[in-house]
Amino acid sequence: MANTNESASIHRQIEARLADHDVRYTKGRQRVAAELADADGPLSVTELTQKMSESVPLSSVYRTIAVFEDAGIVSQHLATSEMARYELAEWLRGHHHHLVCIDCGRVEDIEIPEDIERTVEDVVASLASGTSFQPTNHALEIEGRCKECG
Amino acid sequence: MANTNESASIHRQIEARLADHDVRYTKGRQRVAAELADADGPLSVTELTQKMSESVPLSSVYRTIAVFEDAGIVSQHLATSEMARYELAEWLRGHHHHLVCIDCGRVEDIEIPEDIERTVEDVVASLASGTSFQPTNHALEIEGRCKECG
DNA sequence: TTCCTTGCAAACGATTTGCATTGGA
DNA sequence: TCCAATGCAAATCGTTTGCAAGGAA
Image (cartoon, rainbow over all chains, first blue to last red; front, side):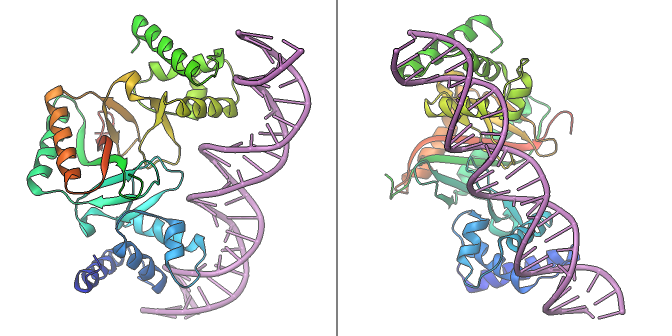
């Protein structure tokens, strides 16, 4: 994700998506997008703000996140945390899952081999088949202790 | 879970666990536990309070939840919601997963056949094997549209 | 000029906490 | 009696919003 080409491509896609929603891709929004694209896991608005060198009011970052969420550019991470954390949506960063440290709270993205992913999808499909629930997405969150807290 | 015997057993287990933590199983706490045992999905403190006939201050329910969480009796549901939702811990209600409606927000427990569960565990194990992350638990959240919102 | 965007401060809502009172062992 | 548990009100803290100033088309 630190790759320059990928990053440029992501920015272009975000710009296009925002254009569809008739909103501008301003510098402030670009900065937030850059941090999200660079992150290795979902970030809270506070973390996001701290990572941005120049001082930006929290409310502006909140508004940017709201615009992004509305346009489907970011999604909120499933968590038990007191603070919401956000990451680029799947169509931008690819399907992935999370390792959540139960001690320090750190969340790390994890990519999962295609064959295993297919297995998970089979599981989801077979679970839903008995019900009238129509699945559109799934999240496999793995809790445990990370390297540092191990 | 509406079964009386099961329910009685759960209360006994909770009482014992609380005793281990040197806290009493008071009437207020029993009422909260009863609602949780009766629920078919995780509940917010507000929902919990509303379900309890007699009026109880929110702060008391919050405190009960805090005590329960501390004793490992309830756990907080993984969510993107603005309000935290709680359910009885796994050792009390068994391992299960969730169907989350992306329209109405309703969360429903889903039990998963043993062979499929084993598959999920294999997936988790194989994902963690490459890392220094030590998994202790996992959650498979299935998002989609429920019967009513379908 | 015309709107969208931003900053600042105030408002909100979920959750927590201080303190005095109640109640169980 | 003694300390945990509770009710109430005030405090916190993440998040949202009103409004006026700034900026792009």
